[in-house]
Image (cartoon, rainbow, N blue to C red; front, side, top):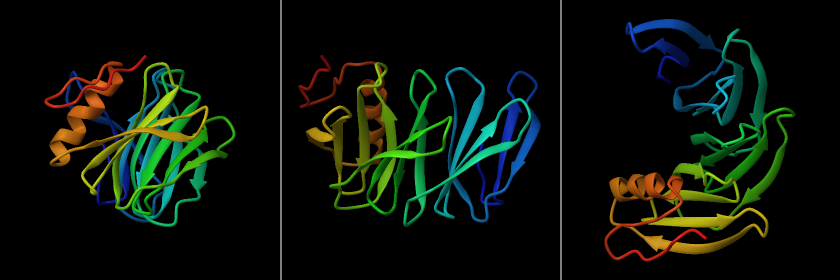
Length: 178
C-alpha cells in the first residue's frame, strides 16, 4: 500500500500484518504495484518519481525521473521487464525495470491520466484520463489505436479490468483485442 506519509507498506495478507516499510519518496504515494514475478515493487508519487524496490530486501534499486508532474499510476508488464506510468503531466511512459531507462513516451491526452495497464501480451497499453476517455496504444507503432468515451472513473477502471482480460466488453463498446 502507498500512503500520504510517503511510505510503501508490504503486508502479509493472511495475518493482516505489515512486514516491510519502504521509505524514500518525498511526497505522498499514489500508486503501488508488484511485478508478476514477485521480485519488485514499483511506487508512483506526487514527487514526480517512480521507485523500483527489491521486494525481498526493501532496497530501492532505481529512481525513475522523467515526468514533469505527479505520477498517478504504475503497472508492470506481464513478463516483469517493463513498467508503464501515467502522470498528471498527461503522458504515459514505458520504463525498463533492469536499467531504469524510459524507452517510450506516449502523448496526446487532454487531461490528467489516473490509471494505466499493459495488455497481457504486453503489446498494448491502456490509459484512462479525467478527459472521460480510455486510449489504447499500440507499443510497436506508438500510435493510439482506439479512444473510448467513458462517463466516469468507475467505467474507466472497468475498462482496464476487461482490457487485462484481452477483451473489452461493456455497454456500447465493441472493441476486441486481436
